[in-house]
Length: 240
Picture: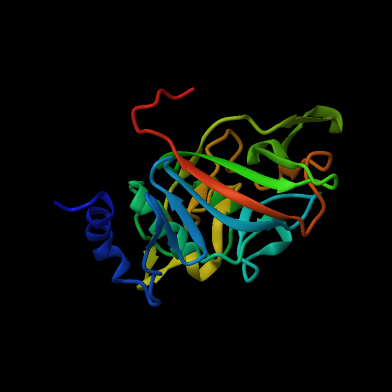
């Protein structure tokens, strides 16, 4: 009888075979716990974790997390983990992934693209960050609590509200011309709709690249190491 991991590998094989670089092979390091490159997955808790760091603790956000080679000027976090390894780990946990059809790769995310961008669908996931504060105490929080949304009103008034608590979407990126776009673009997660990212923001305003900002009083200093975790929610869990 095949294990859940073996079945997942067989399911993922036709997709992974298209990748230009090899996905890291999963290695079991403890019962139910596997490593895929620098990414760790725990099938007992349906959680994937990997190291990251705070890129900026103030300013406009277009992305949630990218690699150091990605668009770091508008991202909350960066990680040197490989997006393709995160994708492999999520597939092994049972995420459907690859739910987006590989169309032409957009040159840039701008108002024209966002105005026509379709609503994305995917697996519901929760995202958390864990870090050590200046006092040496371990802290953990849903990543959305590090983000605010600006609501622009008449007469130049602006209301600032926290990003809504709740799940994110694991959309899984896609292949274009035999290249895995999340890996090519260094794209883990996006605040504004981007089919090439592994993770997308399902909140109202996801098609607006001018409203998402870092919450400065909540985020530790830039450069702070964090542990980033993705937990796959059960498919039958009721939506909030």
